[in-house]
Length: 67
Image (cartoon, rainbow, N blue to C red; front, side, top):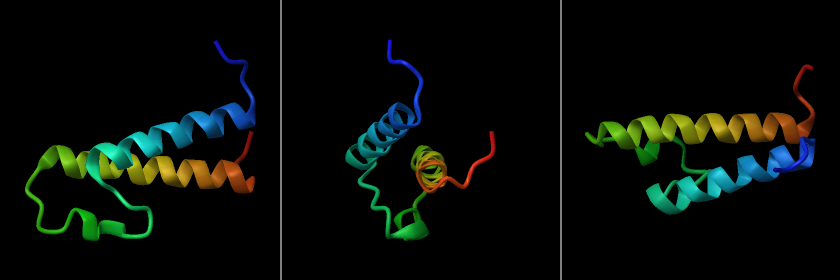
């Protein structure tokens, strides 16, 4: 088990983001265009999770969080 640290957390988040990009084909700079005209509910839910992970990752990386 890894010891908790900011870097370990960022690494875990990045790994999850990369995994979702490989599974669903998401691209960070393409926004909701990736789910427009899609009727696959699972893809839409996955995009919501992906977008949230990106926001949390960037927030922690930039120090925009409160402890």
